[in-house]
Image 1: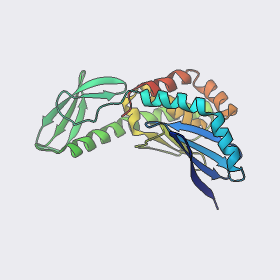
Image 2 (image 1 turned 30 degrees about the horizontal axis):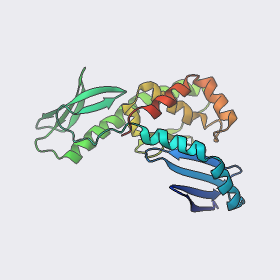
Image 3 (image 1 turned 60 degrees about the vertical axis):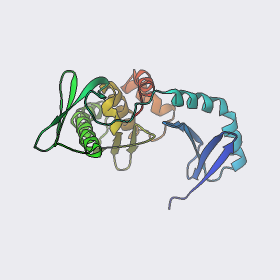
Length: 236
């Protein structure tokens, strides 16, 4: 049975979510888009020890939060003509085409064409484009997985695409399944490739330890550039 206890620690303007669970080491992360700070700690660790650890990392935490909060945000989309949309890192102007047929999306040289019935509401337009983005990722990822399965000597049994607020991807090593953030369809293809490699590497090493990063260096030597690119590009 997995046991975990979650609590919070307030340090002035900073609130840290702490989860005690059956692990051996302390893990500290800062998550976009709001700079949420999370700590995972062993169940047996004294809360005072965790507090001292967090205080010792305050300078780093604040630096990471400043970077995340300063990151450019995309304005909310209304799905109207001449609105800017990102596809694989490139900007396209939306062209809404009304027609009496099922909705579809077409990518032209400079425009993203959205075909919908007259009077289609904004939420439905958003849904159509989101599903189109999902399909773009699903079309590309099998080839990337096949490429790196050979290189890494691992097998991905299943992958999926979903919205995620704080991660670009996740991996369940036991199920050999990876999930990818829908927003990756808006980023350069090389960024998607980096995330696929990152998550597949967890099939060899579940933790972000030195062994994990040695694997990443070996499989995708330019990973730091594309990780920084993901952090630099506008958030949805």
